[in-house]
Amino acid sequence: GNSVTQMEGPVTLSEEAFLTINCTYTATGYPSLFWYVQYPGEGLQLLLKATKADDKGSNKGFEATYRKETTSFHLEKGSVQVSDSAVYFCALSLSGGYNKLIFGAGTRLAVHP
Amino acid sequence: DAGVTQSPTHLIKTRGQQVTLRCSPKSGHDTVSWYQQALGQGPQFIFQYYEEEERQRGNFPDRFSGHQFPNYSSELNVNALLLGDSALYLCASSTGLAGLLNEQFFGPGTRLTVL
Image (spheres, helix red, strand yellow):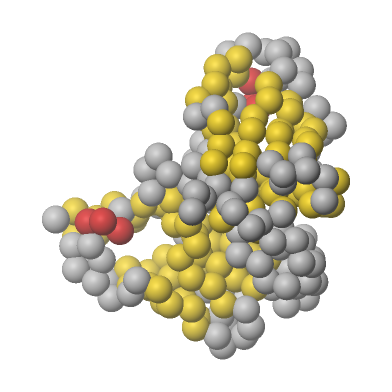
């Protein structure tokens, strides 16, 4: 079946550290891939997306590259801030469908000053 | 421009009761999807409504039902509540064009607690 696997959290970093959150997927066909972020008490916000192999999504200093050969979409940021503390979800959507999202379990990030 | 709104914010029910959650989509959106997010888990797709009909459904029992109104707002109904139904229920809206990558915008959710 179609699924998304994320690295378990929490991930605890000091401000200005480098961030990587791993995400791998299993899917039939050619999915689009997403990273969503959930701040405390808020709904999900789309952080970035990639629709085909080798595409790089980027936003607010975060980046992720769609790697078809390793079925991965790892999230990276060169220098995290305290305000980046949140839960991050990797997700996929299958092509030709109605944009139903399949999410990973989420990774909590805590950034300390 | 208001985003996706949901009501109520929090709700406490007892086992066996019924509950109705409400969602108003973002302006210009005609499609509403519902997700269940259990504590510590990622959201799970419940179903999607378009043109007042259920267009797609996830792996949820018939106790979960919904409705979409002509103004595109939507309700999620859960009958015969179980303890395991305790979760954050998220509504997402988008445009309904099938086959295209239409970004989904999420509301803040309704936190349901079943005692």
